[in-house]
Length: 462
Image 1 (cartoon, rainbow, N blue to C red):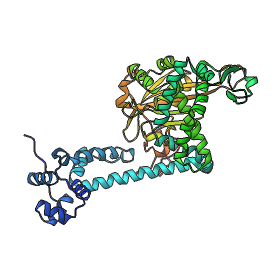
Image 2: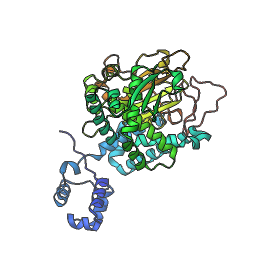
Image 3: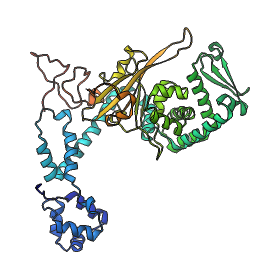
Image 4: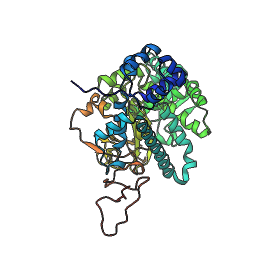
């Protein structure tokens, strides 16, 4: 027979009392016990007996399973996650001791969790401050726009619904060109020397949409859809920007441009049809490209937006970097930890796919706190189409939670060998990383003139 453990409900009991607006005296009268006994229960200096549990349930009409749930197990799991931080790697922390701490001292456990959370937030803020350097003020509108998109999880309900309605109209009319013609706008494809360094230009006087004729089919379609977004959906986009009340006009301009691109993708890949196809094809990006006549990057971008209430699909994080490591686009549809700073770890395959142009590379990732992800990365090239045009090659990556990777066709082959990566060197406490560029915040470098370790830095044990 399993040994029964005393039940301590201190923090939960205190929270219940405060939610009910009761003093310890009032709760004591309700339960027919002394106020001092209530205080002892709340401080976990007395266990909750079976009789007391029944009194709580009957008096306050509570659910027995909810009130008697084991906080200790939850604390043990959360504290264990915190203590797996490489910062504590040199300390022996047996799981039994962690369980005892969580079970016997939930208050201390909660304090530890709050302290580590504050440490993590401050470290991230400091890393962002150091990374921004002297040009922080200049780049502020970009960061504000990125924060706005991130807080919205890159999903805008009103815009997506309107784009889906437009997509149905366009299909019934016979395509985007025919739909524009019905509105009195003629689409013309002209050579680059006539376009004068423009990929798309609207001639208001003659009501003509001019498109560079060297663009590929997916780029042509996207440019036309972007024009439709800027005109037919202008009020929808402006409403979102105005509601956000950005501090700087430049931020509003950047967000308006991003939302037009979002709307264009939603027109080309209407939500319901695209979401069904993504699930049916198991998120095979190349198959989706063929179905919707779009590019790899356009599909990858659209996959981060599938958060319609009641019709949610697999959440993704999207990153685009150039060969110098500069992050030009970062979209988060899942609240992943590397959304604010991520992309700078050279061990992530997104920085290596330039060696294999056009080839998809998959990778299992593990962050210092133990969180695991599955990544898809591939190089993409813009500027193709004619001799003399500057070609820019970037890498794009999609990442999802590792336990959801089975829904992706890309996870079918290969074993799960996890690569340890960091959000950024400044926040990564892995002491044994040979790819590190700078020490992490809060660690002192060991002064040792007579030994050179295999890693760039050796740290003082704290």
